[in-house]
Amino acid sequence: MSFKEVNIEQVPFNPFHKIGREWMLITAGTEEKCNTMTASWGGAGVLWGKNVATAYIRPQRYTKEFVDANDTFSLTFFNEQYRKALSLCGSASGRDGDKIGAAGLTPCFIDGTPAFEEADMILICKKMYHSAIVPECFDLPENEVTWYPENDYHVMYIAEITKALIKEA
Image (cartoon, rainbow, N blue to C red; front, side, top):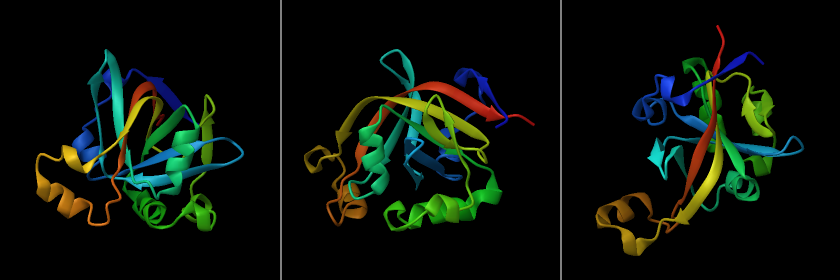
């Protein structure tokens, strides 16, 4: 693995582009068993005096079980050549087989947290808070209608970014 740890505050990171357009993988678990999912919703900022990331996971996603069972998870970012792999990780379930292998990704573990050797950037995140999105808190009802027609509201996770790694050239 050829990653270098960097200060997250020094990484040129545009979350609107990296998360919303390039997508990311949310990965959690152990060396014995882990799972990943593609996400294009999330954020990064400062909360409670810490650099944080937010991730949103629907209750039916298999990865949620791994995030809930562990204190940490990773957010991994890739270059465009891995778009098909991210697409597969967003459409196939790890319940049904080895989607990580099918995507051609190689798990690696950073302080016990799963990530991927093919990533360009890895954020290791320690859970701080989680809460379900609830219908009564929508200020714009059309968002509930548009994004939750099946009432499968995301759970929001707020996590401290404890480590940022970038691939060495």
